[in-house]
Image 1: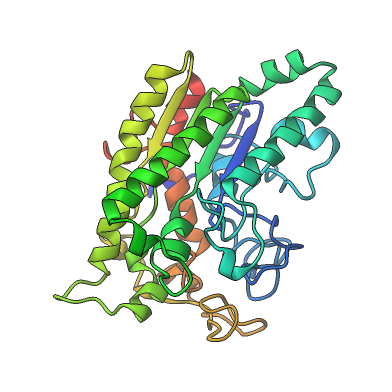
Image 2: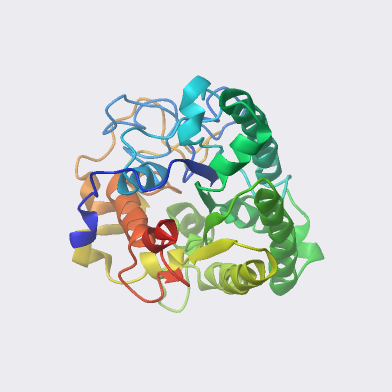
Length: 346
């Protein structure tokens, strides 16, 4: 598969800022009081430095995006980003985080998207000190790429958890998607006001195909996924394209793009050598950290043949595929209006 060949060479943007949830988190949750953590074995079994807080056996999507963009080292998590490192960007992502502040609260603390924006404001003040003035910081920030993968927890750990949240009783699926888009639009405009100009937004994935969801709501009518949940998420994703158009029209010099994770993860996984699409590679916990890997248990050895490492998160090879097609679309439906590779050239 050609798209798996990593692009080596020159850094294509001076800095990369990442926001989102556990699919991007590379250590921000390690010191938080939460069950949403991945800083223990068997997480990181294929990562050079072992368990780091990445919810995978190896690198995550954020890591691969950095590699495709020519960065020689992973972008530092906000909680440890210090000194000159922040000139190359910061990763603010947090397991359990959502567009809504309350999403994921039943797991414990997390940096919601609003808190991630506050943390970015802290970084901007640090950049102004490093570069000598706020004007210099703003000039630097306008050249960066911003990538956001958020929304999964607003469904998984909010709307579809009626025992903890009232949203599914208060809103129809369409009303909830409208509500999320309205909030997200405000947050993206705040990011623009912080001088972000090149912004890639990932849609919510096919969460109706997650092993945890399949266990909770067994599929019907011969489907391999929970179609009702994927349908609810699709309402939100469909509106993201329109949101990208609105933001690009409203905000001078803004270049927003939409990454269609549904398109990227659709298709026949066996063509990639994947044999298990509906179960986790690691032995998952059935107690407090439901669906995450049980600490210290040995995972499957044939990790390249699975999609999922635990009940929620992909294995490294699938993260690489997602990042590769977000960076360089192999289908017209993978990104809109352009892919990340073309975005950073503008």
